[in-house]
Length: 195
Image 1 (cartoon, rainbow, N blue to C red):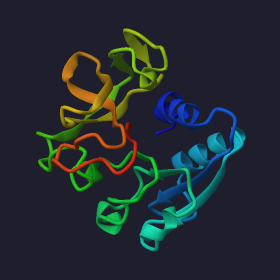
Image 2: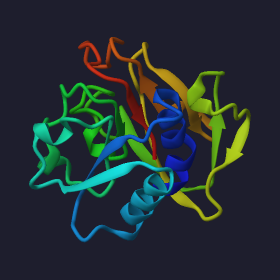
Image 3: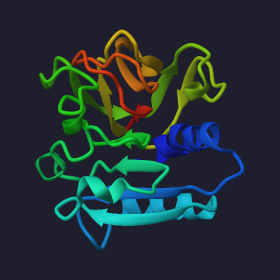
């Protein structure tokens, strides 16, 4: 998760407010947090942001109140998060593959609408949107092979990167507020999906 957050999450934070510290909600699977989640907390705190960590089992929609960003960690249980954050008015970074469909960001069929590819180190950047961070071509994002998530978003999504060698599998994509999601509803907030 850290490898992608450094590219995409930081870009998102910069696009919202380069100068202001943000109040961030990080929803995780367990407390104490995993090593991966601790890295995310540390990275955000080093950049001056305040991070509230909440276990997915006790998280509620109101947990997002007063926050400028919600991050749904890959460590959460999709069943525990459910639809708690579907209509919050706070931008989100979603790392949990199993939430893509329930949030309307992709279809609901695993391995068709979303999935993961093992042993990856590179992404293929696409376009010139700010989500690319100005990166072009094939970019190494991990020195060790990792499982990378992908999802097939709706037509209104911005695709910033695909799985290297498979342009049909977007790995970093997002929706601007008001864009039509894959489930034909309107995005209540800015979404970013990456892993």
